[in-house]
Image (cartoon, rainbow over all chains, first blue to last red; front, top):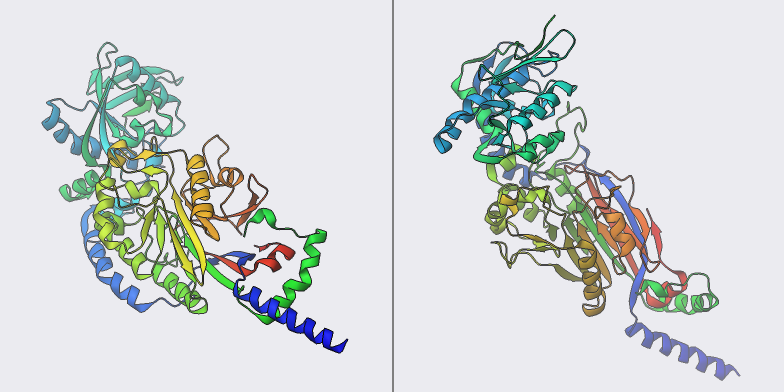
Length: 254
Length: 301
C-alpha cells in the first residue's frame, strides 16, 4: 500500500515534469492604466541636450521682433468688424493679390475669412513670427474662389446672419437701421449680381469648413501655394507698426 | 490562448484547478509578463507645457516620458512602446524641421512601431517619405494602400515580436483621408475598409502567425455617433484583437475601456488624450494554459 502511494507520487511528479516542458502559456491577467507625465519625473538629460540646438534655432527665428503693435488687437472689439479680423483680411488682400495676379492676370475682388480661425490676440508691443504662429497655428493656405453673383449674394446673407463678425476686406456691407441690407460695394463699385467675383479665403473654408457652403459651389478654385501664416509673417516684415481700427466696412446705419 | 475556451464556472473548470495549482508549484514555465506602453496624437509636443499654461500646466514633455519608459523597461525588459499616429503638427518643431526631430527622438526612446495619422500627411507623402531615414521604428498601416505612392514598400500592414517566447502581432489602421486631408497631400494613397482589414489581420495574426497577443494601432477615433468607423465599433465587430490602442479624437479615458467582440471575447481599448500628457500602460500576464482554462482571464482597469 505504501509502495503504491510512492509510485503514485513518482508518477504524478513525472507527469507534471513532462507537462512542464511542453507547457503552453495563455493570457491570464490584463491590467491597464494611464500614467501622467508630470514634473515629478526628472527629464533624461541626453534628450534635453539633443533638443536644445533645435529649440534655440526656433527661438532665434520666432522671437526676433518684426513689427510693433500700438495696441491690443483682438477679434472681440467690434460688432460687425474687429481690429484683428480687419488686420487679417487686409493682410490676405495685400499679400495674396500680387501672387494671384502674377499667375492669372486677374485681381482678387475681396476677402472672406472665418472669425474662429483667429486663434489668439496680438498684445500691444513687439510682434514676432511666434505671434503669427499663435494667431494662425494651422497650415491653411490661401485659395481664390471664383463665385457667381448669385453665390456672392448667398455669401453676403451668410455674413449678415452670422452671429460673429467674420473678417472681410475689399467689400463693404451696409445695413439700414432695421438691420436690412441697404448696399453692397465690392472694390468701391456697387455689387453686380450678373458678374462673377474672385474671393480670397483659406483652403479650409473652400472645403466647406465653418458651414460656408457657398464656397463649395465655386466656379473655379485657384491655389496660390501661399500659407496664411506665411502671408502674415511677410506682412509683419513689411510694415513697422500694426494699428488696425474698427471701421465701416460692415456697418449698420443709425 | 483561445478566449472562447476560457471557462470560469463550469464543472470541467473546477476539476482542473487542483492540477493547475500543482503544475504551477513545480514549474514556472507558463508565467510570462509583457508590458505595452503607448502614446497617441503627440503632435510635435516635444517640450513640456509651461507652468502658466491655462490647460496643461507643467504636463507632458518627451524627456520626462523617456525617464518613465526607461524605468518601466528596467522593471520589465519585455516591453513594447507604440504610437497610434499624429506624431506631426502642432508646434514650430514640425513647421521648422518637418518631423525630423519627432522621428529622431522616438527612435532614441526606442519606439517599436507607430501607425500613420491624418496629420502625418501634413507635409504631403513626400514630406513623410523624407523623414523615413530618421525613424528606427516601424510604420504600420494595413488599410492604407501606398502602392502608387513614394511610400510603397516603406509601410508594413503588420509586424510581430517574440518576447519571452510570447508572440505579439501588431497591425495599424488609419482614418479615411478624403474630406480630412487635401488630396494633393495624400495623393494616390488608397483607404481600405478598416473593419474588413481588421478581420483579415486578426485571422492572419492569430491563425497563420500563431500570435498569443494581437494589438491594433488605430487612428480611427474612439467613438462617433454617426456611421463613421471608430474603435468601439471595431472592437464589437472584431474577433481576434486583444487590444486596440486608439488616437485621433484626443480622448482622455480615465481608464481603458472593455468591450465584447462578436464572439463574446473581451477587447481592451485605450487612448491617452494627446500632446504626450499621458503614457498608456497595459500589462499582459501569461500563465500555464491549464490554469487559465480553470480561472479564466482577469482584466483590471
